Amino acid sequence: MKLQMLVFLVSYVLGILFSLIILPYLKKLKIGQVVRDDGPKSHLKKAGTPTMGGIVILIASLIILSIAAIKYPKLIMAIIPFLGFGIVGFIDDYKKLRYENTEGLSPIKKIIFLFIISSIFILTYLLVFNYGTDTIIPFMAKDIIMPVGIFVVFTVFILLGTSNAVNLTDGLDGLATGIITLIIGFFTAVAIKNNDTEMILFGSTVMGASLAFLIFNMYPAKMFLGDTGSLALGGAIAAMAILMKMPIYLAIVALVPVIETLSVALQVIYFKVTKGKRLFKMAPIHHHLELSGVKETKVVSIFWFITAVLCVFAYFV
Image (cartoon, rainbow, N blue to C red):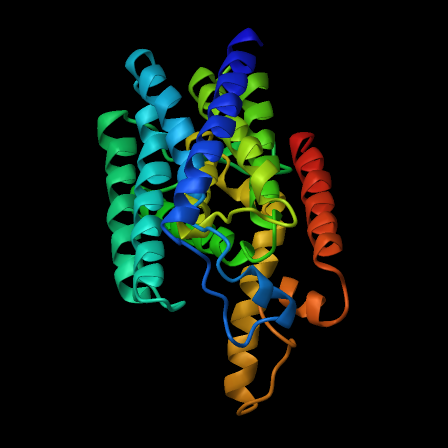
């Protein structure tokens, strides 16, 4: 208990300090959010709010994790997608800001970079640390062991799918940060129950930095995660789930990001099938709720509550 509280508190304090240092710097460089023209009109006032704030979480966490990895080298596996995906997000954010548009990296380039990082993670997982392909199934008393080929494909899907889902969820002040903090809290609690030191350290560190950032990200947000933060945090929870043999649990605890992703997919499919009609007023679904008259802060509170309930449920499954 002392170990996780120590790294949590140190990470939290570092997160606060780096937020206070980096926020004015981002403002000075005019690294502001570019708002979609077709988005909710209430979001137009957010234009110019500093983005790339996820770098705060990365820096605060990596200082601690780098030191801890000297004694616990298996932390390197969790760091690979956390840092690697964050770097891809940083490049994406930089391109958006450099050219003042919402495009950033092309989808193909982004997928290629994320796939490369995922491949490095899997090779490290299987060949360097010799982790098995067994996976825990919720509601069942035993694990299943996947063939290596299926496991590799499944793992890539989890890493890419989770990071994309978190990225889509990051559309309202504090929404993605709060949800991911709760999910990391769930995996950390399970790690504590299982005496999994590496995941206790990783979860407590990232959770502390994320909570610190949330202070500056809650409505009205003083800075946003950007793709830097959303992709990094997506990589973090995917890595924890895979390393703890619990990737299928993401279908429960990350139900909100899953629904957000499905709403986008359904919107695209419906638009093409009906030749121009829309299933939702706007996707992801949090924007549909906003345009339907639900206040931004209420949408965030509801989605946080749903995630918290699902995390408690999953813990006892």
